[in-house]
Image (cartoon, rainbow, N blue to C red; front, side):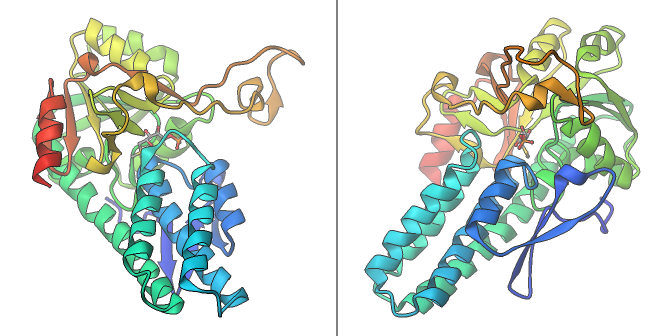
Length: 354
Ligand code: MRU
C-alpha cells in the first residue's frame, strides 16, 4: 500500500486529527478534534467512518473528554470522574448505532478507568490515553493479520467485487476487505477490483476507488445496479466486503446494498467473504434481527452532487446498513483466521479460548 496514504485517524503530539472523508476525493483535509461534541459530529457526519476507525476515534474521543474535564475541574473525585466518563461514553456511542466497534472501544476504555479507580484522576486520565493508543496500534496489527489470512484466497487474474469502503480509510491501516487485496498486489498477483459506487453516500466511488488508485491497484468503478450484469459476464470470481457487526449466529450487518451483492453472488456461484476484526463479532447480539440499523436523513437520498434529484416532500427511506444472513457468507476473514461457513461454532470456540 502506498505509504503516503493519509491516515483516517492520527494522534500526534497529543493532538487528535481526523481526515475529513466527506471531502474526498477532491480535497485532502485534516481536522484537529478538540471537544467531544466535535468528535460526535465527525462520527455522525462520516468525516471519520468505517467500523474499526470509529472505534479508534471513539476511544481517543473519550480520552479527550476526560482530559478536557480535568482541565476544567482538576479536583474532581475519582468516583465523580468515572461517573462523568460513563456519560461521555454514552454520548459518543449515540453518534452511530450499528457498528459495534464503537461500543466495544468505549467499553474497553471504561474498563480501564474502572480498573484504575483507586488511582488519582490524573493517573486514570494518562492510562486512558495509553489505552486509546493501544486500541489504535492493535487495529493496525490486526488489519495486517486479516490481510495475511485472506491472501491465500486471491488467485492470479481474479476479478474481485467490493462494496462500500473497507479499506485503509475505514481502519488504522490497510483495511479489512481491502487488506488481502493490498497484500496480493504487493506480491505481484494480478487482480482487478470492481468497486460498487455505494449509494447514497458513494463510499465506493469517493473512497475505495480513490485509495486503491493511490496504490496502483487496478480498480474499475461500477454503479450498484451494474453488479449483476458484471457478474453475469464472468468478470467476478470473488466478493469481499467489511462488516459493522456480526451477530453470534454469523449474520452480518454492513453497508446498505451488501445483502444484494451476497444474493447475487449466491445466484452466480461466486464466493462471498466478509473481512472484519474479531471485535466486530458481538456475542450479545444473537441474530441479525437484533442489530439496530441506522436510519439517516432523507436529504442523502433526495440529492446527488449537491442538487435535488427527487420531488419536494417525497417519502424516503434511508437505512444505512442491511443484514446478510449467515448462510450467504462463504467465510469470515478475521485476524484469528479464516473461518469457513458454518462458522458460528468456531466463533464460540475462539471466544472461549481468548
Ligand atoms: O457508513 P460507513 O461508511 O461508516 O459504512 C462503512 C461500512 O459499511 C464498512 O463496510 C464497514 O464499516 C467495515 S469497515 C472496515
